[in-house]
Amino acid sequence: MSGLLEIRSLTVKYDGDGNAIKNIDMTVDHKEIIGIVGESGCGKTTLIRSIIHLLSSNAKVVSGEIIFNGQDIIKYNKEQWRNLRGNEIAMVFQNPGSYLNPIIKIGKQFVQSIRNHRALSKREAIKKAKETLEKMHLRDCDRIMDSYPFQLSGGMKQRVAIAMAIAMEPKLILADEPTSALDVMTQVQIANELMALREDFHTSIIMVTHNIGCAAYMADRIMVMNKGEIVEFESKAQIIAQPKKEYTRNLLNAIPELKGLEA
Ligand SMILES: Nc1ncnc2c1ncn2[C@@H]1O[C@H](COP(=O)(O)OP(=O)(O)OP(=O)(O)O)[C@@H](O)[C@H]1O
Ligand SMILES: [Mg+2]
Image (cartoon, rainbow, N blue to C red; front, side, top):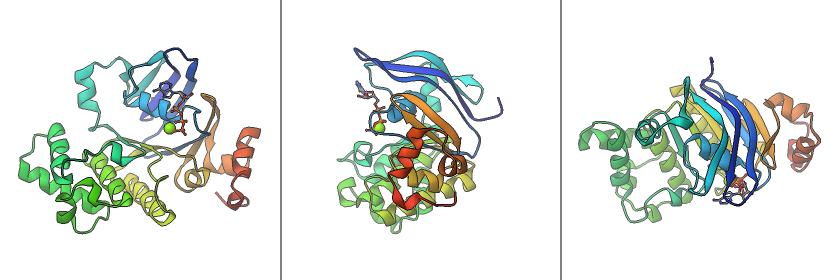
């Protein structure tokens, strides 16, 4: 395999329910940005949480393989996951509030998270944390390091969460609606910052979004999902200009401003 990630026939179900995702096949290349779009409940979060082994305890991988850098990571044990998660694959959650600990200052959380992955002194970890916050164009990093999450705006918290995800320069970032709770200007800034990451670190990104316009802006390829299955998975140009499936056409027609957009 030449790409970074290959998923083969992945099926996941939750206890007592039918399959939440069915027979998913996908590849992700180095430096590639993939947008995953589809209606609420179609399985987007289930898919990306399976990749980073963070499914809830009532979920079960029924079948399939997830090959990352040539290794089937579904078979990984706890120790192997501890090494992989954060270092090689990192996740940005939809709501940074659910990721940041509300009662610990940002600096302390960030330093702990860096030192969980690297044998750095406290001083070195503080330096790395500040440098990474600066990369996310956060000004006044000293004040941010000394703040509790509630003292920051939504956009700042999301940038902090992304900074924590990129600190180890992972090969793959999974982002679950990283901008949907933010205003349009902040959404565009964060999208641009994520796109700059792949230039700087050759990071691949899988981004889940409700907004096909956002996927059209950022992604190289777009995966359209419906009811746990892939409807189509093609280049952005193909999906926007020549969607093959009626489901995709309906999604596109729901956003008038996209009509006629050159992808
Ligand atoms: N923890 C859970 N326990 C049981 N069922 C779940 C759980 N999480 C998701 N599901 C079910 O799995 C299916 C896929 O859900 P998932 O959260 O992956 O969808 P999604 O595309 O991310 O939706 P949204 O856009 O609303 O975030 C849905 O039918 C959902 O009800
Ligand atoms: Mg979701």
